[in-house]
Image (tube, rainbow over all chains, first blue to last red; front, top):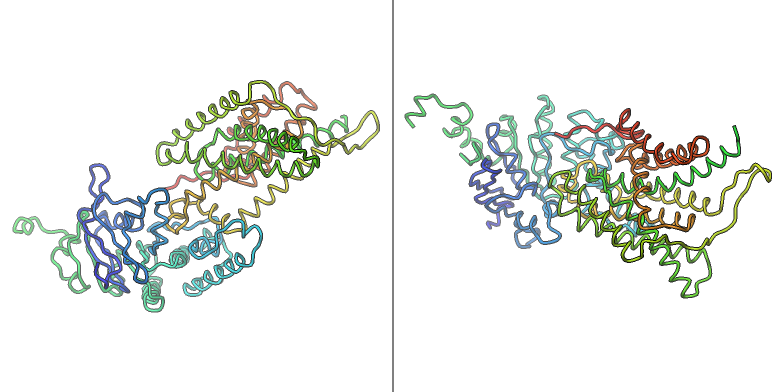
Length: 276
Length: 305
């Protein structure tokens, strides 16, 4: 795969019985970019995310994630079907994290616990050393808490550390979900409609935070979003889906002026469609 | 009112209740994490009773004379082997059915339950088995005619059960493994997406449940001394009742439900009728299901969208 890309999706097709949710979808996500996936409702954007993060096994096609520090690229489908130990948790450990359109925090756990549980890759998970209270285990726990507070500070949630996640106001829950995704130590973070339900001020704040994540914390961002001013403002590359297929891809200007995109969003007059 | 009978039945009820609580933990944790009732759990408890007897017999054949040493070794060994049973049952009978209908693993569980009963019946014989009483001695309060007593075994049962429950609570609330268990219980797919190997967590929960049942099995065997291949059935259903009473899915609920059910049952047999104590316990189950289906400490289930 191209060394400039972090993720390469090729000919991805996802079928649910007779319904084709994604048909022959191919796109790239460049290292260190902010890439957006847009399209009308029901275009199949979330299905793409579900395939990327190992929620679904794609019916056809491949999803390659560049290897970490010069390692060979990983294929997401291969991680899922690995004999005996395969599963979508391996995708997270390979470095893909995500948030959900409808927030999925562990509501009954405190904010800090939500972040600790995401650090499975870093924490010593040996039960015995935990039971014996060994130094290494305690050190790992302290590091985990430190990392959790680091992300709480970045997301400006520090004062909520010990509240239950389910009690937080909506906007803070959204930020906590991003903080939790970051705690897994990802190289690619997939945000599914992060601005849904936020007011204009919160949206502007979110845009700033997403750029901050990419600029300061060197993580590649792939986002699904309906708010066009947010998408056009922060993304460098935009992929447009409609009816499960890629209809356009390029930088914001190209996409904005693409006739296919305008037709998909606004619909075409009957005559125009006839003429085309 | 005979106060000594009340006192005695409270002591008996506490002992019985701790046992129910220990077994109920297995039901409630498994239900909490994968939403199925593990009907083979009572038989896992039965297996542990046999393992206790075998282990004690082997130790005495090797000339071990110290009773505390024999009990500690037996407890450890029984917990380990029963844990292996719990792990294997999940691996063989439930994991392949995950993702199919909700009823499939339930039926598979009943199958495993029958399998274990019949396997023990063939391997160990259908007759009652027993072990000699190892711990004698009682604490007694009152005069010669009216007294309340607690045998040393009963005391051991209460202390060991509360110790095990405290240890488990610590494990679930304070360690990283416990955090992963709670996360998996709340949202398995999300836990998976955060890099938690949820299959391993589910296996761990089965092992913990089986180990708790093994503690109960060892303690009961030390107390009553006799058992057969069918003991797991009634005890299992009683513990299940306890789990429902406390709120299935809730760990403190299972412990509380167990102790309450033990107390109810003892008081009923002390003051009303011994023959109908099982009927009474299962009436509790029916009443809880009618009037408070989410149990004492459980939360009403919210349909996930």
